[in-house]
Amino acid sequence: MRVDFAELAPDVEVFLGQAAYLQLGYFETLTRLIRRTPDLTEKEALSIAAGAALEKHRGIVDIMRSRGADPTGLMRPFQAPLDEFRWATIGARPRETMLSVHITAGMLDDFYVALAATYGDVGRQVEQVLRVEHDREQLVDLLVATIDEDDEMRGLLSMWARRLVGDTLLVARSALRIDADDEEKIEPVFTALVSNHSQRMTSMGLAA
Image: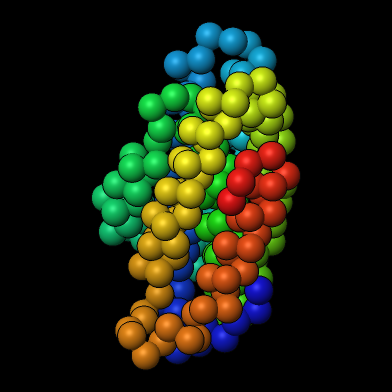
């Protein structure tokens, strides 16, 4: 997804602050699930995915510091809106929350990788961080096992994932400086985000 965001992209500090806080949020969501989960296999799967999110967060924070920036200061403006998004996508059941992390993190990692092309060397460094393995495979295995064994949960998770798409695209839009005249410029990357989402859903046996 190589799209010219030059006219729409936020300042690099905004880009870094949003991207870093998103990863920290995923780490927090996954660690909360660890505390709620009695099963040791599930705890291990969650801890691996949480560790990967924390490493991505730290990688972006290191980039901020290499530029002489204060990571806390860059992330603080996005704490409230991104926490609101995160809480809105935490499900009533652990499997829904696992799916939320997999779907929303996958879409937003794709988005920030596409946006990174705007920022030269800094963008390439962030892209390298975001392309590191997300380590959610074990979570996906747990989701697939549930989907295969429980038709009711299959339906619930399919509906939940469809809701997540709209919320996630709104987060992506909020990262850009756009107005009504810019819709055609962003349509290709949003189409690609949804296409990649559909592939993730299909790979789990869920209808997109």
